[in-house]
Structures are given as structure tokens and as C-alpha cells.
Amino acid sequence: AFKPQAVLGLITLHYYPRPVNFNTNLGQKFGDNNFLRHLAMRTSVFLGVAPTVIAADVEQEIKPVTGIGNVVYGLGLRSPFYWPGKLDSGKFGRVFLQPMRLNAGFFHFAQENANPLISSKENKSSFFLSLTFDLSITEILGPLGKLFQ
Image (tube, rainbow, N blue to C red; front, side, top):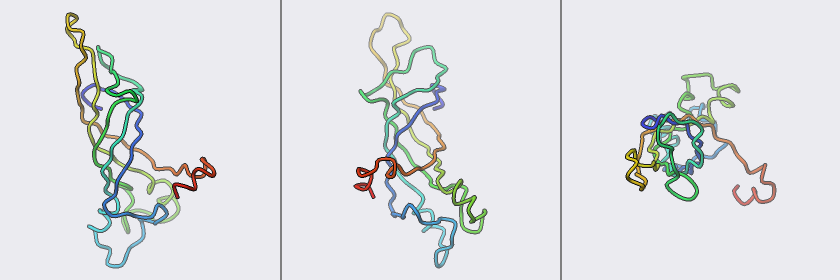
């Protein structure tokens, strides 16, 4: 996040307007190879929390806005570097580039007021960019994971 110069840990939930199977190879051409169709399968709106602030260069400590952390929301782009015919659509691209997601959004946080005479916290927000990787945790969860498939 830029304004507080902070590195965050995020947990987000993404909604895709055009659903795509997790196992679909986005490096393959689909019929007419329509750019807008690919973009719709990759673009998401997300909402989440940043339960931890890993590092921050601020005078006033960043405080959680809610009991579970700070609120984040924005837009995501799945597989930003993996398009049909643009990069290797082989195993390397599929394994390392397809799970990548570029996110841009806003991070809401609280800080103590810089004035020592004021004891209330100030709610602030900052633009952030993140590069994340999708992973499926259904296998790790065992029988409970089958509910999410």
C-alpha cells in the first residue's frame, strides 16, 4: 500500500462476471479467440481482509479497522502474463503464469491521531497493488474440501 508504505498479508474472495473452470488452460485459443471474452474470464471484483501488516514505514502504528483486520477491495486480473499466442502456452506458462493474479484496490486502516492531545483513531484509506498466486486448498482440507468442489 502506497500511502502508509506498508506490506500487507491479504485474504480475498473474488467474483468473476464470466465464470471459468479453475482447470481451464487460459493459454489456449477458444473458438474465435475473442479478446473481450478472455478479459471477462480473467477480470474479477474482490473483497477481503488484511489481517496482518508485515512491514510499515509509519510514525503512527496501523490499527485494524475491524476485529479481524483491515478491509480491502478492488479489481483483479487473473493470468496477466499468460494469453493465447503471446507467451509459452506449454507446461511452464500453465504452471507458473496462469495462477498469477494482479490486483489493484483500496486498503482501509486506522491510525492513532498524530496530535498527542487527541486520543481517537483516524480511519484512512490507501491505494495498493498486489501480485498473488491462486491455489486450491480443497485437497488440504480433506473431506471438508469436497464441499467446495
